[in-house]
Amino acid sequence: MVNLTPEERKLKTIVQGRIGEHLRAIRINKKMRQKEVADLCGFSRSGYNLIEQGQRNLTIFSLYKISKVLEEPLENLVKISDIDKIE
View 1 (cartoon, helix red, strand yellow):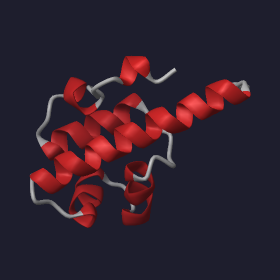
View 2 (cartoon, rainbow, N blue to C red):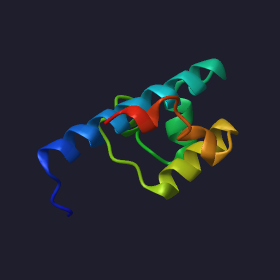
View 3 (cartoon, rainbow, N blue to C red):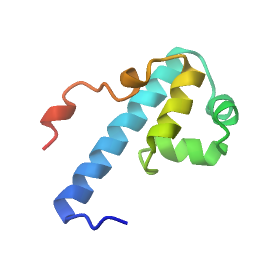
View 4 (tube, rainbow, N blue to C red):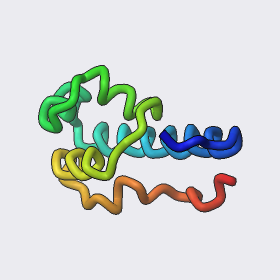
């Protein structure tokens, strides 16, 4: 595990939260339920819920699986307005 400074931990929490909010918005726009996305990705529903809440760190492969299920290009999942202005 990488040791993060307090500032980096705060930034990580913010980024994970923004990505989770973005994933939720995409899912809702596609009229999908969390359970449906979770099942199709091979995640538990509670695990996927933690992703949308920004409480679970995502791997690139997990994001890839979500992108396939949501039928969204991978880059769209992490394309968040003002993400570069978080600091």
